[in-house]
Image (cartoon, rainbow, N blue to C red; front, side):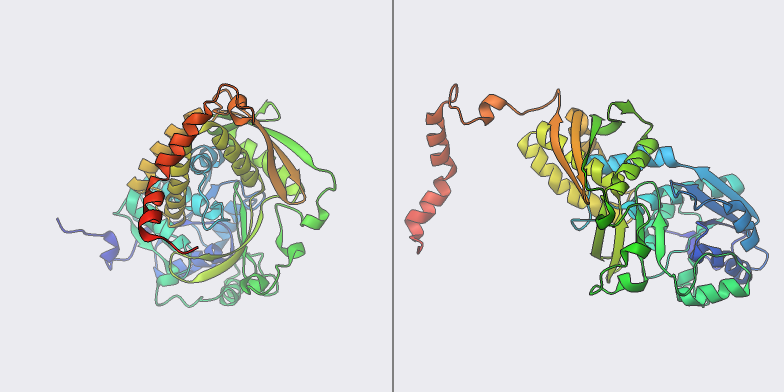
Length: 414
């Protein structure tokens, strides 16, 4: 069977659903799409994922920028339950430090963009991701997975798209009277949601420079301004899902928001990362993930307490591949879904309470209890009562037999 994609068609789209954030890129893309495809209908779709006040006046702004329709969906609960928490249970981290805040947001936006296209009768979807970044892949793989028939409009990859820099986009916005907040002096590119906020551009692009923390940080304070007194928080988990803070139950998205508030006050979750993008080059960014960092630390402590050794070690290997799949935009890939089944099975025993100390940028699990704990205090102690020490001798002899044979045959130098 021949694979036929609607994107191979040269026919102009009749109606486009644009993933609209109200930021610089998507704001200038609305009028550009209208110029590029005369007569096209434009639907601006905005997803509420916990951006704070960024969506204030979003409908008015989208209409002023050229949209015919505006659809706004509050997806915070779904985002927390079906994206952030599965990621947490996997304990997925990309390249040691990145908790995948932008990566995990793109699939849910693109999924609902496809749904809005179905609801509004649109034949195309569009995004404002550049041809250099990861987000273009994350958006487009989701479109392809969920509805391959939709035409994909990617302005930054269109040869006629002349807005090839932030500066050019700002000039274009002024010419078309598009309301924007960015200026050429303050030109950080930011992406914020319930899980994190990322910062790119300006001095951050130079790996030799320290970021300007005063201008950069949004969700947290510089570590120098964090309180001199530590604060403990207790997180309760049920089968790998966080449910309570200090004994009080929260809805999933509200739990993350509360931990963002607490963690941000203590400068928790700040990362400067030079990462390997999927498309090949390296990029440097500043990430703030205060609530997520607390949850990862607490979840790690419970897994260490409750998971059997071989399962835990194998799960760590799975987490690396899972993180790659999430980072690469393959959230709806069958391998990620199969891995999720393994992750969720292992997390059936990850229930209990963890106390995390927050202090000067650090979140440290200092105590954990669980009804599923595999920790045996008598076995762990130095006391030998009830433990057959003679069994250890035979175990070591057999475990080390290959090394013993090699030592006898090869007579290695010492």
